[in-house]
Image (cartoon, rainbow, N blue to C red; front, side, top):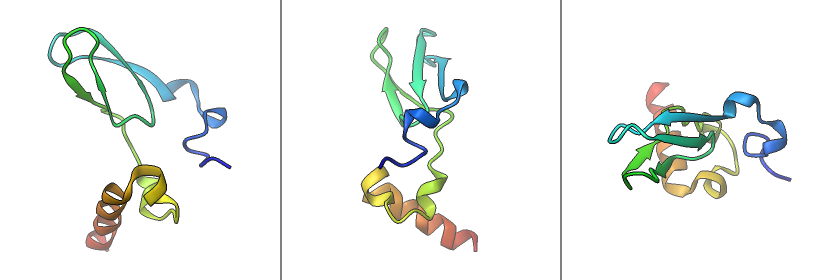
Length: 82
């Protein structure tokens, strides 16, 4: 079974969106689960402005989903906030 947040069967229309590249203005399309994407026009890396992996703060499978480094940073953030 896939994580419901990553399974496209549960996605909504706004989970795929476009933003202008900050370097050249070309359209860059994102899926909600992408952290960054290379602009096809200028080659610059564009970060996903809507990236949100808050579920990884508590999910037992976060290491497998977002990688151990990001999962640990998210868990540390939760501990700092408490």
